[in-house]
Image (cartoon, rainbow, N blue to C red; front, side):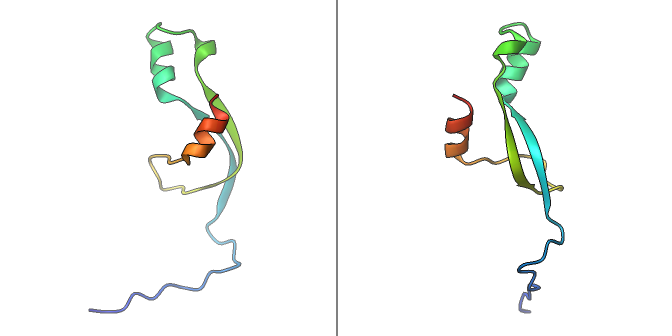
Length: 71
């Protein structure tokens, strides 16, 4: 079996995408669409300087961020 060789990209910016991101609670969003809660009750937050994977289809956030931002 061959050895996996990873390039040394330390200190380089290649491929890094840093954005301001608005995160919305999907369950709240669906409840508002169905009329169970008002649109004003949908919880969301804005996160600055977020490193994103442009090929990702799902989002994973640390629990500490969720607790701090969605209260």
